[in-house]
Amino acid sequence: MSFAKDFAWGVATAAYQIEGGAYAGDKGLNVWDVGSATKGRIFEGHTGDTACDHYRRFREDVALMKKFGIKHYRLSVNWARLIPAGTGKVSEEGKRFYLALLDEMKRAGIKPWITLFHWDYPYALYLKGGWLNGDSPAWFEEYAAVCAELFGGYTDRIILINEPQCFIGLGHYSGVHAPFLKLPASEAMRAAHNVLLACGRAERRVRAICGDSVKIGTAQAYWPAIPLREEDYELAERETFACREDFGSAAIWLDTALSGKYPEDYAAWQKREGFTYPASDMEIIRCRYDFCGLNTYSGNYVTAGDGKTDFLTPKPSVPKTDMRWNVYPDSMYYGAKFIFDRYRLPVVYTENGVALTEWKTAEGEIPDDMRIDYTKRYLRSLHRAAQEITVEGYFHWSFIDNFEWAEGFSKKFGLIYCDPETGERIPKKSAFWYQKVIESNGEEIFK
Ligand code: NOJ
Image (cartoon, rainbow, N blue to C red; front, side, top):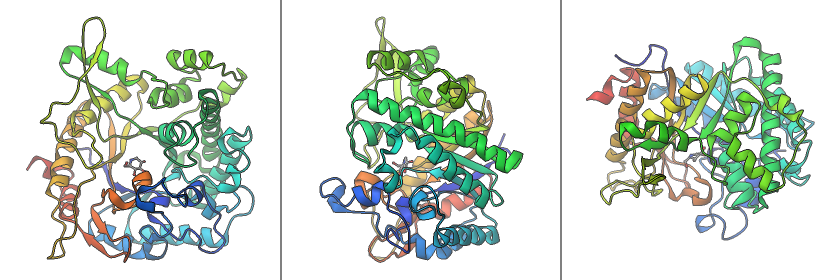
């Protein structure tokens, strides 16, 4: 059987990683604009100040998407471009940019999947304590309402936040992502709690504005445990949702939001750290998602050891991407199954893709056969899941080479090559292949 007729084949990006125009007009700064300016934090001092210059070249990018048959595009809104101070006045220029982009997409027949927050937190709000401030859920709700009012007529999918595992875990706890904080665990837990409150409030508010016309979800950084043997299935499922005291588990965000209760192991960690909150908060946190967005690139094989779980060290033959992530296509199948078993929500792979060491050849081409191979293998695994559970879409990360956070431009994830100095765009071999995948509704992956 093939993929569902209305399966959403798409590509994904995020505002800070592609837009540039960091200082354009009255745009407010965000924590990445400010944080990336400090030497030593980002690979070779790169910044997203210009990135792919999508802010000025968006028409060209939409035209490229259209040329390659892309019908769904997951993009994010740069909060401080739209509302420079984070709350209050909406920027006319910011508004104009996003409406022009959405109009251009509409003309090209491309559906937007809009992520409200993909890590670029307004600096003005950060100075007031950011996610640690008890008002931060209300700030996010206000921003979500502005987005719903402005963009609700263009989209039927809104993703509230992207990878809280990273912007809290890496941003507020281990300090490798903006705002580069290494807070004590109890403080990072406060930030996490405010993020959950923010999502609960925003979910209700967006629904109140858009009604049933918009489906709401989140996008989780999701690296499932993969059973080595079928008899390890339940063990892998358990390990996938276990909290490891690093904010990395999807359960912290999904169990809590969907059931109004923190997972037991995370609650035990909160207790050990002395973190408390009013019980009534859980009524705000509890909300409803219409689908579950997963960003999956790899996972970890597990098997039952001597009374404990063995996390297997990859065999030397396991291929690694340029991020040093193991190529484990089975992460797609098992990951989707575990999520569906637990939450009974349709799954959307909001991100999957591969960074490769590659460059433009003397002939001006990017022959990225390994990206084709990687994607083919992951999609076959996804196809297996789609025979058993509801999978609504797949978004390749990324449409275009872009600013890969702490790694700067050194990691290339795009289907389209982008020279970060000149902005030159060149479709890679994989873009032509993905076009055939879309056109054949997935049949191409079996060739
Ligand atoms: C996760 C993030 O959402 C995205 O911003 C990042 O570039 C990719 N995965 C690759 O690391």
